[in-house]
Image 1: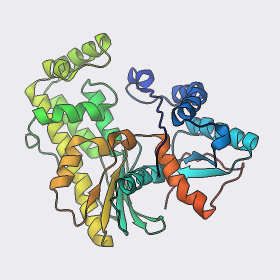
Image 2 (image 1 turned 90 degrees about the vertical axis):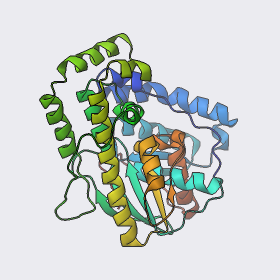
Image 3 (image 1 turned 120 degrees about the vertical axis):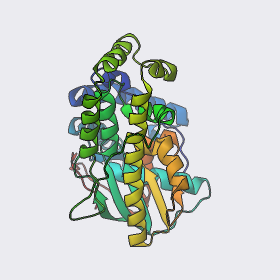
Image 4 (image 1 turned 90 degrees about the horizontal axis):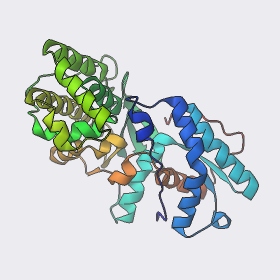
Length: 338
């Protein structure tokens, strides 16, 4: 697969002031952006509507209002142009972003593969078989890993999204300074839980009375919505840098520990790490140093976060197999992959 264009309309400035995604605002921003984004994508690709063979759309999971905007536009386009419609699972898109890039670089992903999809909304482990059949191995029982990053950052007075900020600051702290307990799961040992870790950070901050420095960081945010690393360091004492480093270290340890166990269980020949958190430099470094039983594939930063190219990548094999949807396709906020 060759990507002719990939246009992303960011909503970070819209949601950043609230410390997280506001569903109604997200829907409105989708509605405002979808027509110009499609036009710009076609222009950049040097093509037009007449050259399209099919239209792919995210059917879920996700915020239903935002899904409906994309779904309605895709259906209208297919109806007007008599094009086939392909519904794609958002999580499958993240997996195919890695598979498509690897193929383009001449690097084959062998099956069965382990897929760890980790983002602000998802933390899932799948077995991926040849022909793109999926079996769920484990998932978070509460917060997704990316959500935990965002909530901890907001708690400590940092900007949204919190993952990139913590990732930039973590190398300046000691990852062994604060000892957090790893989650022990009853039932499925491959499931995740991050709510306890988030609460542990809250309790630590209360014991060490971080109120004054948190207030300084929030004041900085009011003056500068996107502070530089140097500005963050100026208002973040060493003890908090150690806390951030220890928090990130624990999240990464949780992810890699269960990924390694899953890979061994299914005798994986490849491992796919995808989703927004797959951009985390700490996770990439730790995965390269970990004793995983198979090669690990990451997406490029541009394809790690949500984008249209990954949906097209997942749709292409469906088009080849004739797995098409009709205009009754529904947006499903909690759509499952396996």
